[in-house]
Length: 282
Image (cartoon, rainbow, N blue to C red; front, side, top):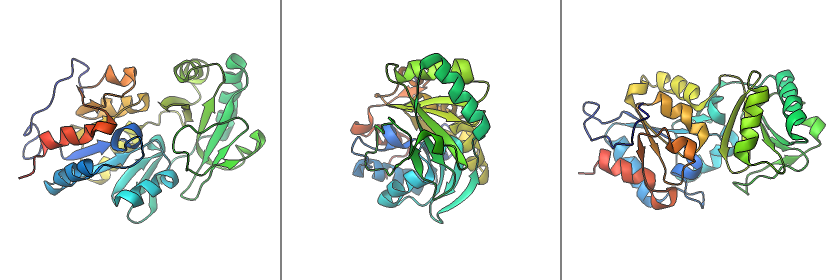
């Protein structure tokens, strides 16, 4: 993927199909701000898959948090969930791969970050399809208000295997918190900012790109076959892996800086606008 000025790709750039794999983020990208997929976007995705492309969702949400969306939109394919930690077969409701965060390293990372920032509000995403999201004191979920969380004491957050942690700090912006966490604990954990109030600590080296590469390999597809859509810094590695990265107009400046193309916002059917050009209905 080039980081030069955004330039649309013309149909036919990849042989019979412009791209054989369409990878879309969920929140802020495929989903509207009402957390639905518009009729226009569904039609555009159907045209792409009808032409022979594969659509794969690549989301920071765990499989458990993504499943209600998948059920609502009828998604039955393979999905990359949990920032790449889980490769999930939505149709079979089965985890194909699952990576966990070393809890000893996680505790050390939290301690190092708090030494710089002061007390953190922390939440933990437990491992597995039935894993809960545990929210410690003061942690406030700012997206998906209907998503289930279990309120616990801070000491209970690391009691069971987990895929990632979420951190918040009063008085610090998300970008500032992510930068500080990366600076003081980036040798222990991966750090991404994936939405408003969502700074995450991941297994070191994990990203949407690593998860997407695993999923694509299972499908017999490659980076060169892939167009990716996203809106947040956690999508940067995916854009670096894919042949072509499309940022939503509402995207974070960090992602806009590396996008090959910028479409309109998620509430203006930005994914559909690009897919309609690449996979026109006949």
